[in-house]
Length: 158
Image 1 (cartoon, rainbow, N blue to C red):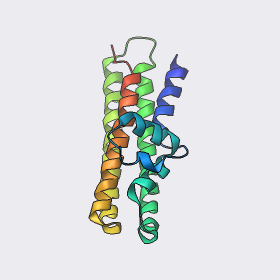
Image 2: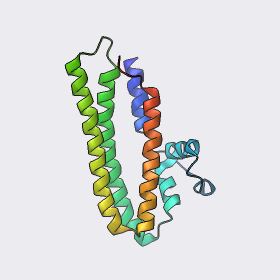
Image 3: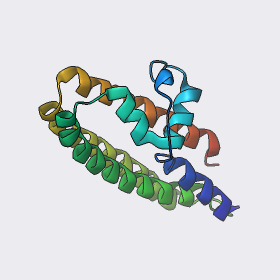
Image 4: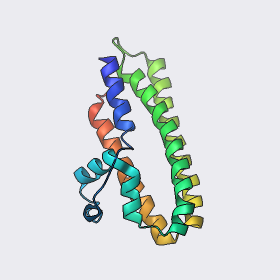
């Protein structure tokens, strides 16, 4: 069970990549099921279609995007390790161990916030404010969908 749960968590956290999003679906970003399908298929293509960047904007944007995604991936891996520790126990969780794992979850969240703040600062210099805000909104929706999928799959600690 521990291996299956770890695989599920990793798959959900890694669902950031894949392969193509139809242009006519971009306008309907409020449809969370369609958003989930898009990010599982090809998040980068989805973002590209939604932002409609000029070549000059794209040249500035994609390195920022890639750097942010790498930082978020590191935070996700830290989160997965902590979640595995919380739910992968076959015995009762001790208070000190639970406290340490909860601390690890908070640190992973803080690492993600730090990466987002750094990305925001770079993004605002690289793109027109509307496009920067649109990307931040898209990324927020994507992260919310991924967090929901993980939360739905993980039972509460007993």
